[in-house]
Picture 1 (cartoon, rainbow, N blue to C red):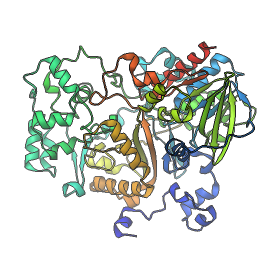
Picture 2 (picture 1 turned 90 degrees about the vertical axis):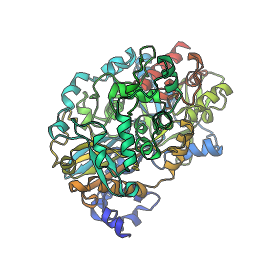
Picture 3 (picture 1 turned 180 degrees about the horizontal axis):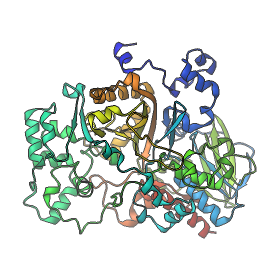
Length: 630
């Protein structure tokens, strides 16, 4: 092993599920050190997906069949016999939208309705993924995907009603979310300049009383770059000759990077400082995000995209983007929206876990053996990839799925496709060509949510940061987890206690200027080619360089790593730089979701909106379409 790898701790015996991929357990057992071996011997994690570490999200084994179908045109023999029951409803996809669709249908059709939910992953919830770690007997919970309940007062009546039905009391988050914890330790935001890019490791921390450009005075950047930053942060209208309407139109059709370059006169060094600022929300850098969207972010959330607020643009005539938040960002379970998925599953399959509240679901250990129990009215079948959905002449729907290499088929009176839009043309080749074309328009955003469990956060306390932006980082942001204690679950109370670090990466063709959809495709390919050890090495190096000044040692302080890999992450939301100005009825997502006989389509893609309520609303619409068609 290289000496640098040893310094980073690559030889440490943290849980690494990737080691088990494709290797016989008897062989592996002889190679493992005791901490990992004990977890394998117990068999505990194998039966309980939330506790698995290493490469998660769309894990190996979850995507290969779909790719063989969609990319290679592989077909599977149709089983001669029907595998099990004829269902009232089969749902393809066990994410929030699929689970919500099953719930809404059960409410409408009655508790005796027979429902089968199929999902290709080894866990349910889709992007609403729960990560668990155990350290010194203490369970520490994090979110591996869908994050929070954003702006719930603006939810539709259907989404609000579902949350009430699940007994989610939003007022309880006001106490559960400790808004004062990080302020208590005077932790702010920072910018990390890494040695490989900037010549030395430097963590820049801005004080509240400083002008925005002042912290850069000690940063390892050139004098010219510092002068440009001073100019950029001064309150100057860089579009003085344009009217308000002209400014809006210009910003709508111009990337923020082009605005900085052509209108402010910013050079490559500073442009690259801001390139990844937009990645967390849009999955691409400032070369593929409009200056208007960046202006909305600046006006509503402050900072981040300098040079725009001083344009004095009146946005009152423009419809606000639906992603803008107006409420406090506190509506967060410790495992993110995985708790919503768990509440839905427990509501429909009560034997899976005890309890009846939003508090007890946080610490409930689900019994996965109850998900697909023979004779149950609602069954949730994991590790099952649907490869064909056929509308039959008698009105029924035949669904063929593959578990391992073995195909099976079931019949349903109705079917809801709550999977990714781009898979549907391969599943249902009989759909009209215009609908298949619309379904293919959605190119989901590749996304990585990495959770790293560390022994303590004293290094963050010493350095004065709670979240860090990394202009050239492999992960573009690193932050301490949301401080939420709910029910019997308690968040880290002091810097001496263990905590989860949340790291975000959105692979794309950064700085290329090509369309966002093209960048997402390139990023997805890159993501699927990246092994876990590459992630681990980058994580250790990044955290070591960033936090070393606070005493952090990646070889000593990292206890476990879970990489939630989502090659098909956020649903695509339209981009004014690259997409036409569609009429309402001509949006691809509207054309794509049309009912086809007894088959309806639900998912966040069907709403062109990558948020919890979007997934729920589309589930409700799909169920309504099927019931109204009867």
